[in-house]
Image (tube, rainbow, N blue to C red; front, side):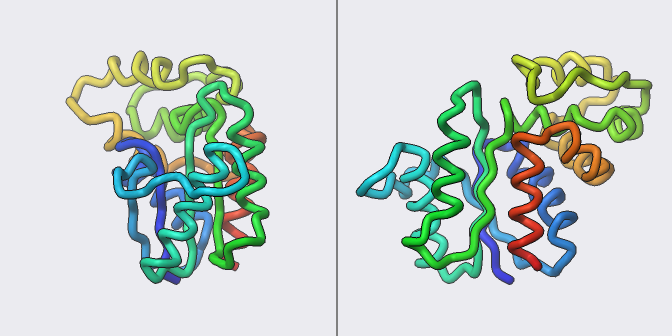
Length: 192
């Protein structure tokens, strides 16, 4: 299946999200990636709010480029309406392309904080169980303070990619029930 993954930042697009999706799908995917803010993609005209329209526009773009499916992940960033708009876009009957849309509560970075066992393994020092990842006000900052304790220089994207290799997906679903759990169900259904 030829799949277009669309996300917001380098932390997602430089491996972590692709790894998580591949592990969830447990099927061979021909994955291509793009950035939500790609200048050539403009909001779809018509009914609906901004993120609903943006999701529909990416569906159109994926169809135009010959993809079988589109997977789109954005950060909630404290804007609760994004989840509602993406749920509406997930259920939108106006486009035939298969899709898995996800909203990371509050940000994708929170997903990386869900499994202290994976964090400990990747960072090579003990990490305690973090507070509920979806309630951490600034998950990127929380990860940044952990990242500062690493002696060897690695980019956040490289660390996220390695965490994605080791994270327990069941733990991630349990600890991020509002954002990751519905997204995981959609990816599995897409690949199934």
